[in-house]
Amino acid sequence: MTSKRFSIILIAVLIIGTTYQYFWYAILNLYYDPFGLWHSHEEKKIYQNERTTKYLMSLRYVPENFDGILTGPSVSANLDTRRLKTHKIYNLSINGGNVTEINHTSKNYIQKTRNKIIIICLYPYMTKDSGFKDNQFTYKNLLDAAIFSPFAIAVTRKIYNHIPPRMGFEQSEWGWNNFDLKKMKRGIKFYDYYKIIIKTKKIIIKINAEAYDELGNLITLCRQKNFTILAYFYPINHWEYQSFVRTGSWDTYKKKMFALFSPNDIVWDMNTEQYEYITKNFDAYTDGHLSQLGANFVLEDIDRKLQSLQ
Image 1 (cartoon, rainbow, N blue to C red):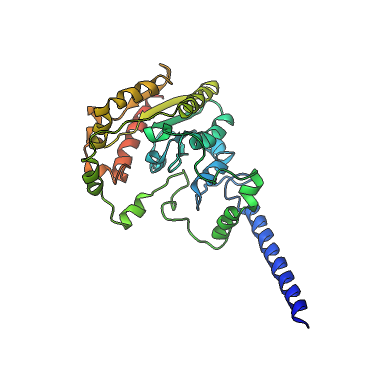
Image 2: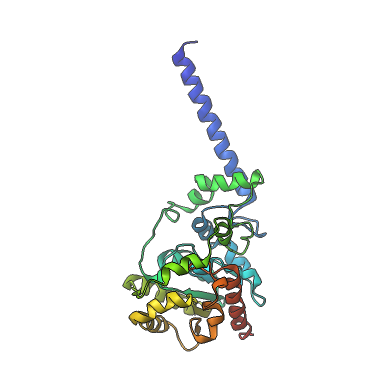
């Protein structure tokens, strides 16, 4: 056998082997249904690529299995909504997400349901810019993302081989991103963050016009689908919050956000004196984000608001 012929045979074997493995995992994907798109609706975990996974789950799994959603950027992503007692709420918050990315996923749930609940976490990061920031939302079509993409194959391979989700997603059946685990492993504590922010005297909140309109459109869609709308201003640690107050931009931000809602909506600010048990509590934060203690305080407050609906 000549070397040329051997090379051709080797390449053919590799192509056939790769193709076989590729379609084998595609078939397994349909069987396991890791994103709840096809047939199975038992609780689903997030294995990797939070943004793509939550987008796919928002198409069918979340609408068919949950009473409502919590949506927002990373500051609400680590709220374990399983702790809410009155309603089954899926956490569709996107770690690092702006309003474009948050809307992209939340609208799937809203458009496919009626008379549900949405809880919006209001935080300046969400409306400081507009547009997609990475390629996790840029798959050409549903089949590409859900079955044939390297991401989908990687998820199916993990399920097939009993490999656990990435750290922080071990208990992600309701969308919880427990990123505190990584921070604890790295020894991150709020005091280190405090030493930096205490030197920051003034921070100006910028609201992108397109982002503001996108948030308004999301709220309008909720009204059209007869959603119960709750929205809370994220409890910023006291020292960072003062940097916003000193510029006067917090009051401007708050007024613009309130203008998007109606008197029938439940909207409240967790940066008042009433919430200093959170905002002045070093143990309630890891950095700009809440620790699990702080997250649980917020969940308890949300739960009280939900109970008032009954």
